[in-house]
Amino acid sequence: MEKRCGQDVQLQLFICRVGVVEKIGRITPATLDVLTALVWTTEDLHGFALAKEAARPTGTVYVILSRMEQAGWVESYWETQNEQNEGRPRRRFYRLTPDGLASARQTLAERRGANAAPGLKLGLPRPGIGQRPEVQG
Image: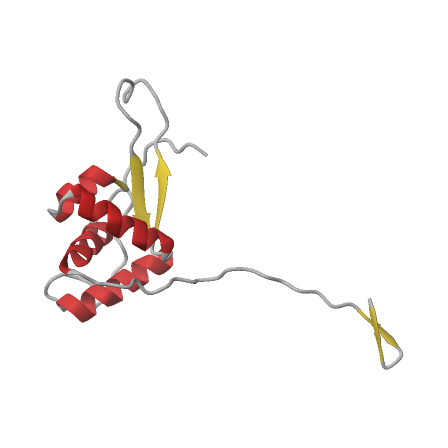
């Protein structure tokens, strides 16, 4: 507690991170393809499925996803082991953050125009999220 003008004053400091996304350094055609796939999917996609959806090599897609995750555009999680996926490696699933979705829509509208991604200019909501696999905390 601190004294100011004869009165006790309690100072409090609140620190939080709200809506912070960084710019992605390079926006290549491959980056735009990955963003398009993420914006218009109805479910979280694992890396290989995302590469297939974007029609890009997995090596390219994983580098783009890493950059987008570091910038706060994308979040990811590992699936949990269960009877359905026993005997194969776990997959990492990706989805846009709310701020990443807004940034992705803006970037796609600027770079590809409204015709390339229907609904972007109108600001329509993202299609519903489908069934997500179990998440391991």
